[in-house]
Length: 171
Image 1 (tube, one colour):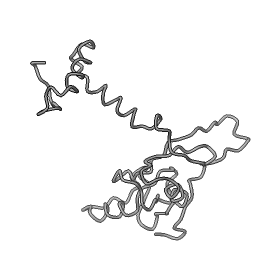
Image 2: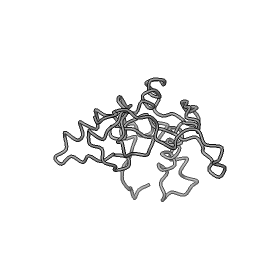
Image 3: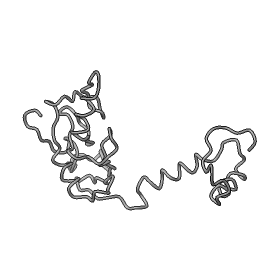
Image 4: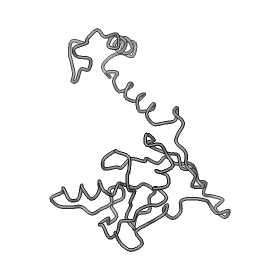
């Protein structure tokens, strides 16, 4: 890595000045998983030219570039140059990772820079499950039939093929 191989949270992230009356910051959700592997980040890095908070995993990044026939040394988040000399370990993200359980996938970052794991009800997983359930209802079926079809499949009527893919004309 290049000189000054450590960075903190990007500039502009943290406490607002009192003069910033028109700009109101709110909390943001930050994934602790690498965008390349979807696994928890081990060594959080970003390129020196990056202005985003998100990091990616150093080992995953280097392995991806080594495996590529034509390495693409651009940040996987913002496309800034991200060759090894431009990479910086983010000490702020390291402290966030160290201060959370291994099973924590994301944190909520407050405008003052503090962070906390999201409440179970506000985690993206329940919202994702709702979208998946809604997507599983066929668009061709009337709304009154959709819950019945869903309940029948949950009752175990078709144990051999619980998930059907594709369109069927006999439904």
